Image 1 (cartoon, rainbow, N blue to C red):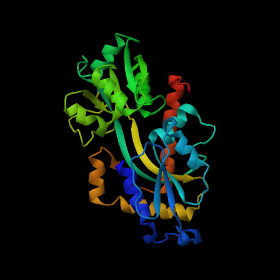
Image 2: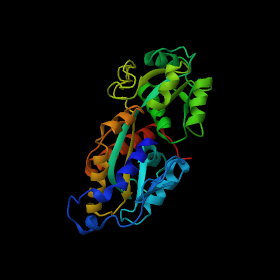
Image 3: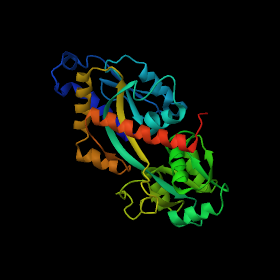
Image 4: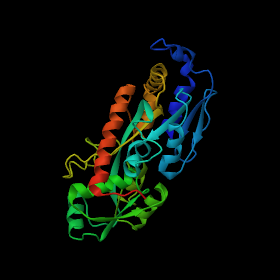
Length: 312
């Protein structure tokens, strides 16, 4: 994932960033290797001599996330998380081992993106309202795919069901490749997934996009209407990435990390590279990121409760 590679580059150069608070911790930090835990499959190299990456995939991101929650709060073990690891998974499973609000200190948000609703190529509905009408005429006879039980692709579809009063059967796949193959083959009728990952298949005619779950149209697909334009009020399914540390990490270190990450994301080249992946750079303070996580967490806890989704 390009986003966490860029963040690693920023952290590798952190010693060049002056302390914004002048605290003792920030002045001395870092004086040894920083470990960035990525709770997804391997895909990132070691960059520089200051930061190493540790891929700890498993349980939808819970294994790597739990490992960081229990680490020393000294700024040397960080988590590069996303929506599923930080807000959606915890909303579904209510993990006993960690709580994203209680056990983490947000450092910086890196990107935001959105889910897009796609259908099988021969599916009769050509827009969101046609899909809703078609599904209401066939309650329980249509299905939706997801990239795993309890992740954002699952809950986005559950939110769609709640907002439209439709009834789809959930078909969870083991991951993204299997779910995408399923929608292309027509095994499932609809699927929510990240814009950048699905647009190449849309452009190739292998699947058809009906709407993007954002407040405004996506720059990668300006002709694609939003779900809101399609008649589903306030329908937004937000993806994001960001860096967090164990709770109790000193404020001086949090400030230094936040400054380094935000500085790295000012580059026009980086913004353009992330934009091609359907991700928009969203920098800000650690406090703003904390408030954002709390809001997103509340949204998906509400969806889980209303849809009566049980942990498996």
